[in-house]
Length: 318
Ligand code: SF4
Image 1: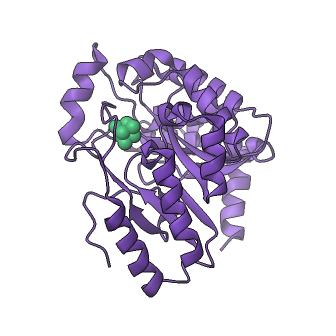
Image 2: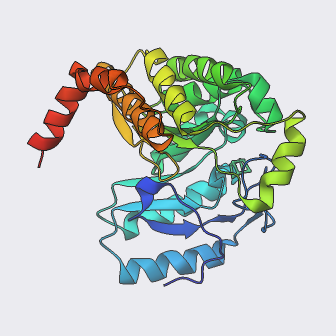
């Protein structure tokens, strides 16, 4: 319907949303793992263009329930312009349930509490925030432009103004060297900021960004493998103890093991699934290496109660 300026990105949970590009690119554009907007100069789209697209969508898709404001950090718009856009959108989509956008911690902190409240009242109610890691060491190495403390402050500020926040973290961002530090510090930041949603994906360096990432890392970067990604997930889940309910998802296509649940009630069952997945991975790895000289390990696996219950639940779910 629109002549979008590609590439165009949105979070997986906004797959069915109507997207308005109110800005192009990312005003920061320096994170060394992110290739999303390197081909674009950051700019604000002119009001007349935005208005025309809202009018067009209102004619063709008046039943729209969800809208996502792109590109990388729409919240960078001046507050008055954001409110102008939201005020124009709202009455034209009577079934609207939610308007959301990506938001950098820096952009949330730049707005005053009153500005955030006004924007919320105008209809933007959800932010997707890329935390990536809670470790200051790693955040510096990937030139995130934020620290664990600024991330916590920005999440708290957004929540205080009423926003629903969904945060992303990246497994493997510190490589093997900083794996433990990455998870320990990320869990601390998640516990203090207690987002409503947390999504975990796994580091994937695209060709266009790999050299920059490795250069900025300033020391040899050794990527983690699938079993180490699973170990990071397991450690992270074991350390998450938020004060409020947190929906956790590790079902992004980049993850080898799609597991999710809601803290605190599903914590134990998620840990059991990780435990079982580790067993299966270990077993598969040993089979691939022809490492079963005796039946001992196979017998150990076969007698594992968690594995038995998991297999029974799989059979039962068919
Ligand atoms: S991760 Fe977000 S803030 Fe960083 S460059 Fe990419 S779009 Fe911009």
